[in-house]
Length: 188
Image (tube, rainbow, N blue to C red; front, side):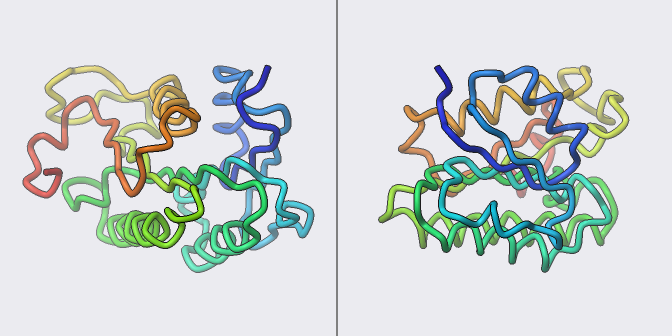
């Protein structure tokens, strides 16, 4: 039996399909929306229980549209119980370019603000930050664990945040980076 009835994935469909393959029991129904600007009305009907905002993994996704789409789904209330944003560790300013750092940091800040605003209604809001090398499947430069970060790592983190037993975790960012953020004073 699936953990959630309806999940919505905002972001790259290819990554969504790989995560769905690794987590077949996470949701009965997945709605995948590649472009947050085109978020269809049917997604905002209050039936979404799990929202995964991975739009920042696609550099072309406009930040304002992504934030607006998440706000719209969250505002419907309804069945929503989990919001998980996915960004890169560029949010720490240690890798990636300045523009990516700004966009990812904005999503992390937005998630923390949503966590505070939605906690009373039982909605948890968390963030997964993948090593920027995730896109190339290379070992992140200077990674203490000397291993590449892959889709399975994303799926494991998503499974943790989406688990009904994780209802006590909100406003957190989990860096999936083979240890590279240990070197950043901002990761503490």
